Picture 1 (spheres, rainbow, N blue to C red):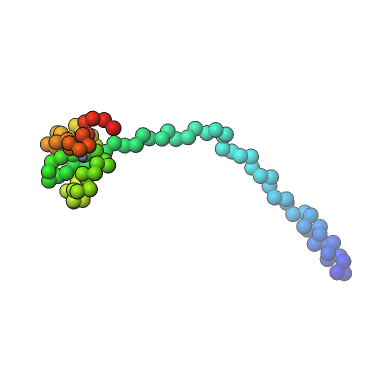
Picture 2: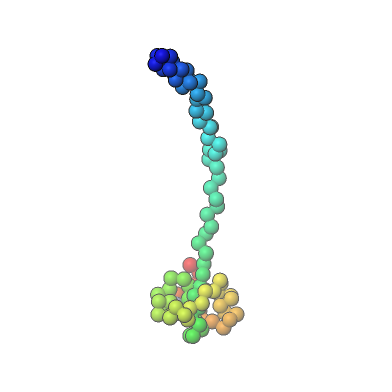
Length: 94
Ligand SMILES: [Zn+2]
């Protein structure tokens, strides 16, 4: 009797559907990487002194955070009445 059960179990195991074959890698090889954006140039305006700096200028550290303003470009800064910093010279390129 036990032997019959064993045979039955073996049969059941054999009848089990085998695991599906691994899917082929659907990702195409060498898929294009997203174009890396060039680092955005930002300028920091000193609201009180009305001077603007390039991001990274050591003078920025002297400005109180609440007095700093993010400016998208030097043109915007000048439009708003800011003068370029003499230390980092924002108009001289990077
Ligand atoms: Zn500066």
